[in-house]
Length: 434
Ligand SMILES: NC(=O)c1ccc[n+]([C@@H]2O[C@H](COP(=O)([O-])OP(=O)(O)OC[C@H]3O[C@@H](n4cnc5c(N)ncnc54)[C@H](O)[C@@H]3O)[C@@H](O)[C@H]2O)c1
Image 1 (cartoon, rainbow, N blue to C red):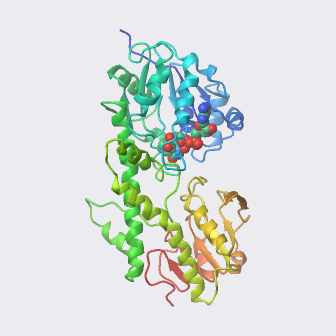
Image 2: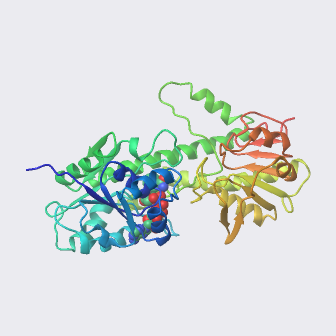
Image 3: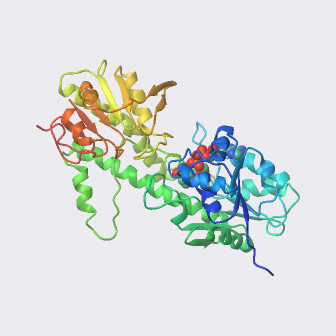
């Protein structure tokens, strides 16, 4: 039998995950049909105007102009694709239960266009069992049989927005199919765009591998945040201690404290797993504890701001507090689940006059109100604040100037990198030392 050789692929959901992938397949010579429900994003893709930091408009334009990538809101665009990849959101409900409704909606929308020989791959991060328990029955309602008429697999996305070394196209990909034929096809597809494809025994194994990766990160960030709080009480400097520990060449990898966790992955994905674990009467205590520790961090930071202001006889109420960086991590524009939003909200509740500067984030919704970034960060603005709070350490900020001009600084990211007068570093017990 002739080997399967896909030449056209559909990507559903052109967000942080889907757009880089769609561009990657287009650059590899495939015909790519992007389906995106947001008409503004569709228009921008078709105009070669990227809205994702990791995809330059020049790269996008090249594949749009060549005709390799087109975007549409219509699922009918997928009717002749050899494969489709689903990259839609998987949020939590307000009760921290998985919301797989996006996956269900897409699966239902795919049914009329599903055809013989097609491969469907889910990339959205989700609990083990989603591909075969949620997607499979919906897709088979078409009358086609998985493993016979069409193929189904899960392959987690590992993109790390803002990472200058690793991106969608140079990171190994884990692939698990419903059966051997599905795994083989999914491996063939991804081998066209990534250097290494790592097959596992099932969709569930691939789903679980992704949750292991993200749970590992959640738990370790939580551990270091807990130790940062302890170091403050014990008059020790967590940053010095991490630097010392990471000289060990094996068995340790550094994680760094901060104002809490953010983004669409780490604060959410592990709770998909703890939800699923309950079905087996297992409480994932590590996940729940890690969640609690991290949830407490924004409040801890606000207490630190109040403490810093108190040291110069100022109340939080009425104090001018300037926040630097609101994205959930450095050098990106993603605000989703950013702990900065909680810090800003609490500072406002306590009566502070808050403003922020973030060259990546022109505006942010805080407790239903839109705040706008200051247009620039100059010495006068820094000096005019009663306290400057560094929540995200974007590289574009001149921290030496901030240190020189600020009246008080609360640094949650070690952006200043040493002790100093009027400087209150997260995890550093010698705060504000003269
Ligand atoms: N952002 C990351 O760093 C990252 C990393 C790894 C995995 N993931 C996972 O990948 C998945 C997608 O995340 P993302 O960050 O790309 O989300 P995103 O919100 O940036 O993109 C998802 C896109 O899907 C679109 N969409 C929703 N429903 C649709 C529908 N019915 N039809 C067509 N388009 C639809 C949305 O409009 C949006 O543009 C999630 O499961 C996430 O957990 C994200």
